[in-house]
Image (cartoon, rainbow, N blue to C red; front, side, top):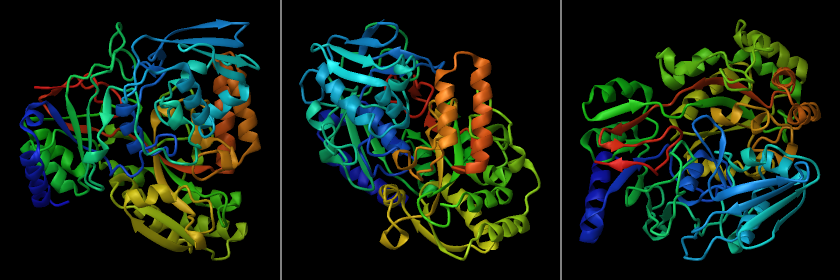
Length: 523
C-alpha cells in the first residue's frame, strides 16, 4: 500500500469509528508481513505466532533467562519418581467468549498441539495418559520421566495455544479460524481487511498473574493499551514515512538501509529486543527430487557465503550479524564450531558443479518459492538463485507474497501439483539453543516441519541428548548432531542476525523478545 492510500484508509477508518473508540489508547503496528493464517498450530509462521501471543495464553512462559515459569498454571506437583505431573490452573481464567477455562480445554489443546510440534511429539510419546482429573487439574501419567515438560509447554515458537475444547478438537491439519483464546487481547475478526489490517482489543475479562515481574512471556501480562491495529505496509519507504509522521507507532522489521535515517529522528528509537535474534537458512524439500538425494544437498555447501547473505540481509553493520553459524544459536551453550569449515572455507562454484555431477543431478526442474514482501527472505533468495543458476540448476523462480507462500509450504505433492523444492527461511534463534527445541535440524520425515528431512542418526543422537544429565554430555551430543547435519543437510545455514525494531519514543514498557503487546504503554 502506498503512503497516500494508507493515509486515505486511516482517515476513513478514523472518521467512521465511534468517538469513544477514537479516544481509547491505540498502538498501530507494522508487522513483517500480512497475517495470512490465524492458527499457530496449523502453521509455524512467525507472523501467526506473534498474533497468537495476543490472543492465546500459555500454561508456562519463558522469562528473560529462557527459564519456564507458571503462567496459566498456578503450580504443579511431580510424583511417582517423575512419572506423574499434576498441573493446577489458577483462578479467574476465562475465554474471550465468556466461558471459564477448564482442564478439559487444556487437555484437548495439548493433544492437538502434540500431534504436529516436534518437541510436543516427544512429550506425546512419553505420555501414558493425559487427563482432566477435575475442572482445574490436568494430569500427565508418563511412561518415563520427562523433566522438560514445563519447557515444552513454554515454547515461544510453535507454541501450545490453549483454546476451548470445541475448537481444540479440530484436526491439527485443519486450520482453526475462529479465534477464541484466553489471552490479554481478543481478535476482532469483523475489522479485518485482508492484506491490510488486523485489529485486537483489550480483553476486559483477562486476569493477570497476581505476582511476579513481567519478563518476556512470563509474569503478569498487563494490558495497558485498549486497542492494537496491525497495518500491513509491504513498501519500506511507506512504512518509514508513516513511522516518522507518527501515523504508526511500531515497525517490526525496518530495512537496514533505513536504520541510520530512523536513528536520527528525535521521536524514534531503534532497538533489537529479541535477544536470540534470527537464524537464516536455505531449506530443501527432502520428499522430492533432486533434494531427496543427500549428495545433491551437500554439493551446495561450498557455494553459500554466510558473509554475503548477512550483508544482503542486514548491511555492513557487523554488530548486527554473525557469519560463523552452524545449526545452534551462536553464543548459546550448545553452539559448536564442529564441521563449520564447510561453510567458512573458500567458496567454489566449480566444486559445486563437480559435486552435483558426481551426485547425479540430471537437470530436474527446481521450484524455488520466494516471498517478495519479506525483505530478508527476498534478499537471501536472490543470492541463492544466482548461485543455483550459475552451477546449472534448472531453476523455476516463483516470486509471490508471503500470504501465498505460507499455505503452499504445507503442500507435500509433486511440483506439477503445486509442490515446491526450495525456499529460504529464518527461525527464532531462541528455538535453536538446544537439540531439544531445534526442530529444523530434526530428522522426523513427514512428522517434522516444512521440508520433512529424515535422519535416523540425528534422531538417535537427540534421544541420547534428552536423556543426558551432564552439560559435557549434552555439548558432546550437540557436536555430533551438527557433524551429522553436515552430512544429511536438513538445510544450509546462511547466518544469524539481530533484527531491530523501530518505534516511537512514547511507546514504553516494551519487553524483550518478539513483538509482545502486554506491558506496553503509549504516552
